[in-house]
Image (cartoon, rainbow, N blue to C red; front, side):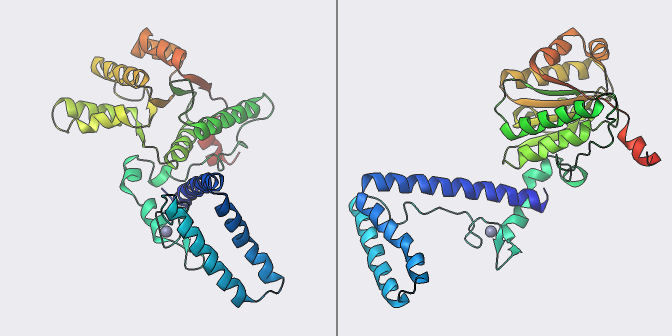
Length: 309
Ligand SMILES: [Zn+2]
């Protein structure tokens, strides 16, 4: 995870904690009207100070109001810090910045956290975001850019609402170099930034792992992580070495995730007809029936970049 993503996780947590604290404060205000009055009086201090009132007087008033507040809370059975936000990091109060505008240590350690490294999104894929997905490689003339704009918007919406979607996930169809990897990694990064476990792997890596578990070369937990993670992203389905066993492994994995209500994002260079031929009718009907289908269009972006078109 990069620092920006870690900052955004921190920020979301901070907002949630502030929100929780504010709900608790509302609860106190409706149960104990005197506390509402006290909080209003305390809030007015800043304004009174600006209007020229003596800081000494205000301070004394504040001490006495806070004491009264604490007494009331205790009398009603609340702790004195009941409606204070409970920040995880006391150095930065979860703002991500401490000591002026320096990035806090908690953000750095989150960015380097093991769970994110395990998702395989670290490294080259960590920089892929919706913001840096360029539509300029897609031609405007035949409606390709419009089509890709819709796909981009669909992916953003999917990631933002994740996991609230009634499909089993997304399937990206289309040739190489049309941005399938970029957008699936961007979804992974966004979902991981919500603190949800994400695994991004090529179909080949998944088969290698499942196969190694089958022959006891790896612990079964290595296979279970594909079944249990919040979002599994299978890159390049169809590029793996196809055997009867690999076909049954992928089909069962996808089935199991559908049954357990877990989401999967799949990208493939194969056409639906090729999927039927390679994996059989059953997997194809799962993919077309339960997943949102996104058909990528255009010319190979990587080739265009090389040629400088
Ligand atoms: Zn911190």
